[in-house]
Image (cartoon, rainbow, N blue to C red):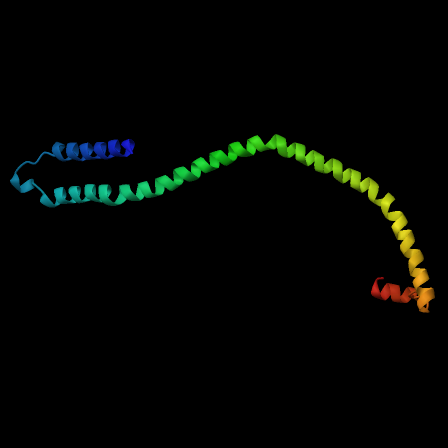
Length: 139
């Protein structure tokens, strides 16, 4: 906030110095509309542009602080997330190694139960598709 006040003061001093450095040759050269325009521009700067800058500056600073914080958080999370990833990979390898060994007896048992079900219910054996049907339907 103090920086904004310093900038406003510097702008006002600059306007005053610019207005004083203009030399008027006579009273006829004194341009009142030029001074009114100068004051109007200064008032526009003070009352319109500076509040707009402040309104945009504060959210921008907040977003910048959030971005820096997220960057630091990301850098801090690399090691724990890497350890977690390695643990997941180890478990995946264990599961991938054990699933075929555990699934084989279940698949064998289901095949036997399917035969037993066909015998008990009296359903006929499902017929195999002909090679032409396999080619046609892609089975």
